[in-house]
Length: 224
Image 1 (cartoon, rainbow, N blue to C red):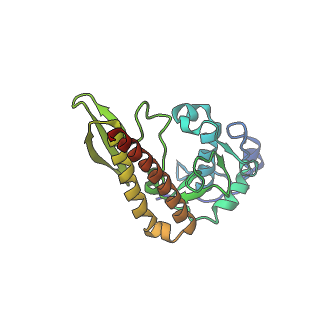
Image 2 (image 1 turned 120 degrees about the vertical axis):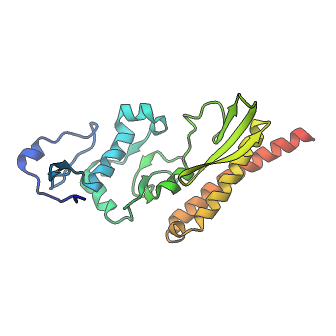
């Protein structure tokens, strides 16, 4: 496999650079996308930076992924070299840049709010509120069976949780499973070796527990 190498940027290549999505400045002293052995390679730091900028400042990306509407990058990180200095100090290989595990609902990419986590961990706390439609997260209605279906992504697979007569029952099943998985992950090596991540996962677990308790209370009141 061809490895990325840092080749010094020339005056000509630097002169051809344009702002990334109108706001990002590539001030790298090396070529960030060199062609090596006939193949275009990307600097991993630059690729992560460009992807972050796209989430915040690409209209095309936000149209496809509306959860990123309103997101921004702090001024410091709009300069590639600044973001790179931070990223080299992180445990980033094989992981994804996340902005809202540490701070629930966060919309700003910054050193205080961001960390790298595995895809499986990242997927656990994703909120599809802007794309899931009329049903709660993890729930859809099966017209064929006339039931509400609950399911939850667990690592790379989708786990079916059953069919229910009411939407509340299906949502509660989803929340209980989510609590179980988050609790389990918070005690595994990735989180145990990273106290900030572990604390964040426990905060997310508490949010799901609160939601579940609210639904249970609502269901019990209807039975009385």
